[in-house]
Length: 303
Image 1 (cartoon, one colour):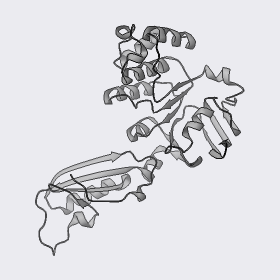
Image 2 (spheres, rainbow, N blue to C red):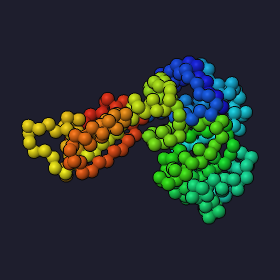
Image 3 (tube, rainbow, N blue to C red):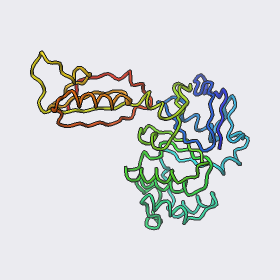
Image 4 (cartoon, one colour):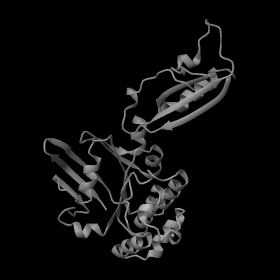
């Protein structure tokens, strides 16, 4: 499903939630919707889902989310961040959801099994009595079992463990290439693995619209931790760690937070300059999808 926005605006009293957003996503797009709290993400998602009206023009496959809501509702699926705590048995919940979407409960059970959730085993339990992770797996299974042309995911893996997340990513990979996905997430790994493009919002304004890798190069951070075995004690010799802006911690560890695109060259240079004193190295990307790296300050730390 193609999504088109032209000068989309939304106000709640004196608060401007969306301010003149113009952008588009082609059918089959894998799109990340990113922004800090209060940036307008939830408002935009609600507008796309046809839950609120907006000024300007918002079209999904040339249809209006409000005027054509019954027609669009059958073609899209929404997964919220937190699964509702329903006071109904799991079996009944699956039966109702399957009936609404015109699929068999067995289809939901098959997807749930791939997420390591045995619907038969928990069928008599109330949905509200399941753990948060189990409720989320149930919701995801019901969503992915139903054929949809637009999948709207709002922090869908927040309650899932690492293994379940990987299974979830695998299920997304199997969706038809024509399925449009909108993923709202703060997880760096999720955005990188699932999406190809980004819409970034800040204060209701579209601050970025383009390829995921380009956005990550501009914003994502890497933490490099290095431990040296025999640091130089000669004050007349330059310390390559200090030269590269590393901050000393405890037990011989040094740390630097740097823009992600600099990590390979930095590690390569240090490996050469430390002259065999490199004892250990930890490199990890961190979730900084809404804050420009240049605002990050380096401070001493305890390793």
